Length: 64
Image (cartoon, rainbow, N blue to C red):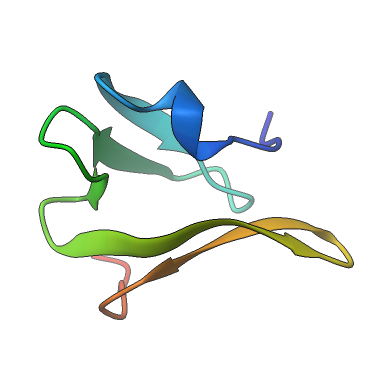
């Protein structure tokens, strides 16, 4: 079940996170910044939004 994932939860960790549509993304937080699916880097984490929490990334992720 998707939920709120704060940046500190992935620091130093690798794993996968469930998306709202039921698919997963792979996250690597072992290099000092979080990388998503080996393609995008989180540039601004933990931004409060009216419907939850967002993390700004430097690329658009497209489904495969």
